Amino acid sequence: MDVEAQKRAAAARALDFVRPGMRLGLGTGSTAKHFVELLAERVRMGFDIVAVPTSEATRALAEKLGIGLTTLDETPTLDLTVDGADEIGPDLTLIKGGGGALLREKIVAAASAQMVVIADRSKLVEGIGRFPLPIEITPFGAAATRRAVEAVTAGVGCPGPAVLRKAANGHAFVTDGGHWVLDAKLQHIADPPTLAARLAAIPGVMEHGLFIGLTRVAIVGGPHGVQLIERT
Ligand code: 5RP
Image (tube, rainbow, N blue to C red; front, side, top):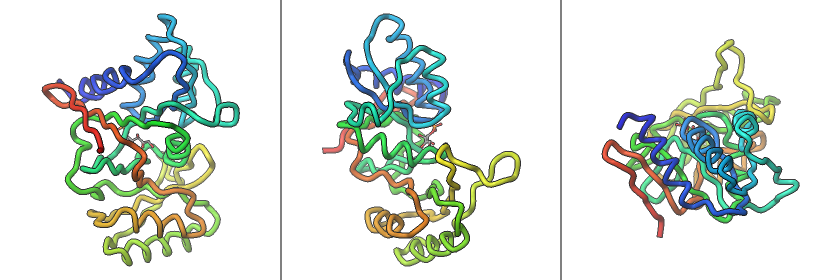
């Protein structure tokens, strides 16, 4: 199986967690896109669900495919969110936000009774941090926020530059919420909970891409099939 097939196989397995009548969170990224497409096939067969997308891209795809959408204002609690990840640690601590949707992804995951992560095998890591940690910030005072982020990461033993993410046009990448993203190149995050707490306390940081304790199940597609990893 190539990588796309591994992602699709993981997405297909996640459908087993979906029941008629569920309120779902729909993730963002290439793996989540497979899930949305497969879910839409079920919806066309009469499966009755309603969903909250975690990005405008996912909203557009779900709308195009005929999936009934709602908002967290109309439906503040969800049964299940299915989303991808950039890194999956052994305890199912995640790094997310490679696609820039981390704020909405975390709000939707936190509003869900369960979050299932879907990924190909390349996302499984022994320790998290090699993937640059996305940190969503307000444009106001961005340089000061960046300095504060770098001080915090150095203070918890993972120093590294926090680089402003650029769009293809060379300007700052802008999230669906109108924010910017710093990608912190840390290499290894030894203490994710402490880093998460300290980043969250910085004025100007809207959200960071550490997802801790939010998921109990990861579905990982590999060359020889799909593996289900459960956090006990
Ligand atoms: C978007 C995300 C994605 O879930 C993450 O980047 C994984 O994407 P992909 O499935 O394309 O590898 O966090 O903000």
